[in-house]
Length: 255
Image (cartoon, rainbow, N blue to C red):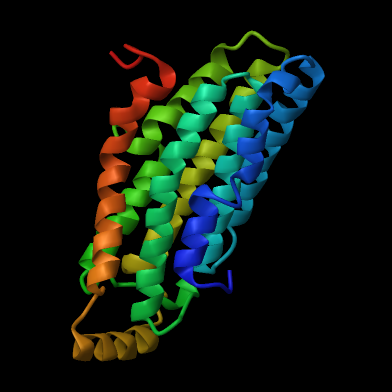
């Protein structure tokens, strides 16, 4: 988490961190010959999603919260691999790239305005001063929660649905772990929004006053290239799940 935020966005959204999931996808024909390996993938994915969600709920670094949420989403992808739903796994991997990149770039814009401050306990009351960043943060958080008709909903809901309906050993237990992980995802996302943007009882007003004073002097929330990148990812986080759902899952699955 010490690297530049655009680098974190690229690595966590679609390249290095998700390479293991892509490797399982490419080697799926090998894993299909052994049911024990598939069950192991399901259990590892379930525990990863749950534990990473618990950890994300306890940390106070804004980038660490988003990073642990990536680990939690990787758990969902491994669950889907274990269920032999490789097209849905790739669909969630595709969707995850957009809203996770949006969250990291929004965090970068926030850190830039607050002069490299990353502790969410020192933030608050920023929704008026940073309306565009707040909107992008809110949109990315809703997408990763699986809010209806946003990009994350179309793949995350499918994973939970198939985990419930798959006739395998302990499928209900896997569904329970997945659903609990989804609850933790909503919890740490709302917690992050509350600590950073909304007023709270113990807001560090001294910190906020001087940071907003310097911010008002510059009178610039984001630069042009930051705005363009975040705007494109925000549009993708709204529409791409619906537009590409039939390409990945099949015709007529959402009608």
